[in-house]
Length: 259
Image (cartoon, rainbow, N blue to C red; front, side, top):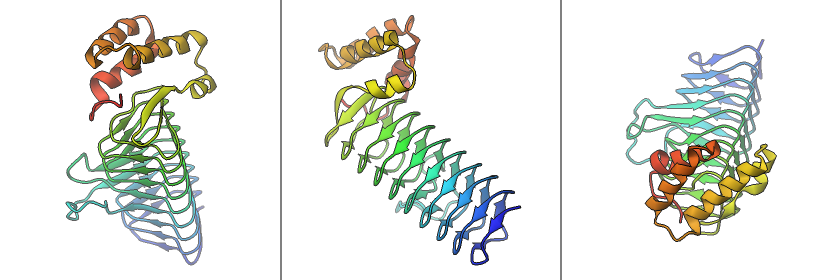
């Protein structure tokens, strides 16, 4: 059975699975679906259409699934989708999508979303992402898997951030961040590969050496971007860890990369 506090307001159009807990004074709106084992603390507001998976923890005063902060929004029926196992801390805001994009904001699984984080309309956040306090994603930002945003990091609209990237505290990005690399400063500049993060995730010495080499080609060789990409493509044929690097450069980057 779900544990719903007597002061919580649950719209008849909401679907609450077994094992969900909803704290005092929280409001769950029409079109909201919450999966088993999810914990909603006090004073949380969730509006629909929003789908929240299983075993998430949403802390007090978070605002989930409200209208996008976009002047073009005219009441279209857009969505927010949140996966399983996420932690969403105090005062986070995660907005639904807009009709100008796919209409859906997406947050994956097992993400650690700290206090005061804002995830704007039409963003896509992958799995095992850390967004530290006050990190801000503007509209249409795409974030890969195993990415870490330091505190107060800001991402410009339509930026993409590749898997395993690390963005240092107070960084500001207005172009795309390739996989594996560390960014620091405002505007953000590349500072090498995310060596410690990659070691923690089990990358072996040879893989790290290959990633370093790809970084040097991209940032230290003096090659133009297309030339460096062509060289990385050759290496990726026998070094599979470079494939996500190559895919990002050739298919996923939308605003050109930080370079």
